[in-house]
Length: 116
Length: 111
Picture 1: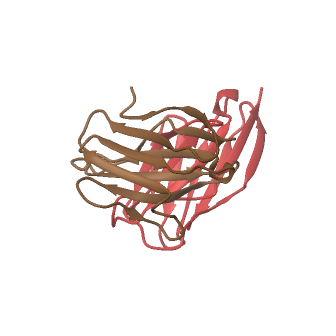
Picture 2: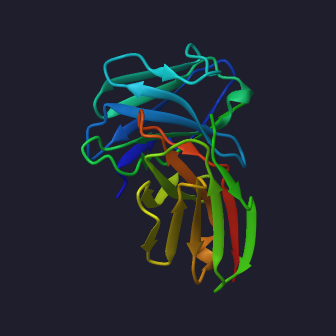
């Protein structure tokens, strides 16, 4: 079964509105989670590292005020796309690793965001 | 920044044939992982190979790692139509836990 759960899987929103995406680790506590973005027919690009109890670390070129990340508990990180625009339409995927095992990363199912 | 390069970008084969995908990377790594992604879906972990390993098998999958050449290959033997998907290599630099993905190979297996 899924170790990392992401919700929603699909969302359509109007330009200017905000959308929240949730990422939950089900079998372990994740002090760190990662948010990736994938454009059609392209690879995954790391957007930011979500740190439980502290500020997220954003990759170069990613606007922190536009992509708000909150990691309020050891099992939940949220990504909020604020004032969404059509160019924000993409596939967003979160991942987490079990810190006690330090093996493969587990990925959520992904969220297909369409801004109209 | 994205450091993995994979080739081929697209591969089309007949069912029963073997599929080989290659991945090259730029920096030192802790391990290298291969993932599969069906169209529009999340990633499924296939296999992890550590930097001190040279070859690893899992079912019909065989992965090699050459750290001197900074390259890895994924071989899928006796392919099936259900193997049709995109395959990504991802390197773990071992610092913060994030992965750096290659561009991926889109595999199409025709029945």
